[in-house]
Amino acid sequence: MIPKQKHLLNEVKPYDTASAVDISLGGANSGSNEYLLDGVPNMSNASRAGDFSPSMEAVEEVKVELFQTDAAYGDTLGGTVNITTKSGTNQFHGSLYEFNQTSALAANQFFLNSAGIKATVTRSNQYGGTIGGPVRIPKVFNGKDRLFFFLVYEGFKDSTPGVFTGAVPTAAERGGDFSGLLSPGSSYQLYDPSTAVLSGTNITRQALPGNVIPTSRLNAVAKAYLQYFPMPNQPGKIDGQNNYVVPNPSINSFRPWAG
Image 1 (cartoon, rainbow, N blue to C red):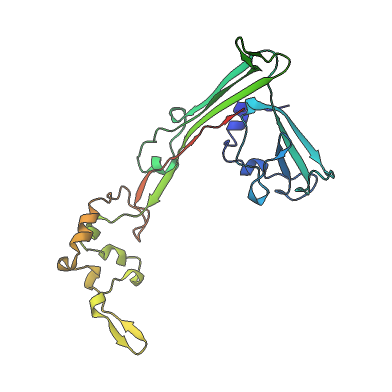
Image 2 (image 1 turned 135 degrees about the horizontal axis):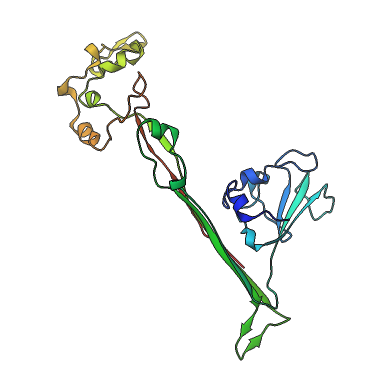
């Protein structure tokens, strides 16, 4: 029995099957099975299923066999999983399907919510269709009982919610004032590179008073770059980390044809 499409979509994306095939068969270690498509090995490196994952609407049968001793199957310790795809018949048949998820029905990410930032609009939409039947060319060829076709298309567009947390220069740091970094301890003390002195095998430098870089020492090019950095939007840690958080959704698009 093949599970319904919507149940599978919540767990495995069609282009990312690593977790779906990480199973143990016949008592062998996980990842030691062979996966076939219509009897042909559909494998990538590390004993994973291949990149081509047929639409559920294109699957006729999934056959799992343990302890396969046939010489035709030499890439397995545990078992084989053979996916058989559908073929055309003497009658024209087809199907359409769609599964959609939207952020309008989901809660905001925890760290975005705590920073007072609204959730980004994200969607997951998987859709497709199949058509099959006899090959017919009017007044030229009639494939009834002889030649059939089956075509399947699937589209997958996904933008998964995500969060990026990092550090950006504060307003004081943009002016050369890093005194706020001294509160955690002296490990954040800045030193003047122009005062380097070789003492034996060591180089010593003088500390910048108050951890402040003099305005005259600020590089004009660096100051110009800073205008493209966003300002902090949350307090962050005492050492300046995690003072900036923004939505960071991952976007994917997958459109396979098969026939």
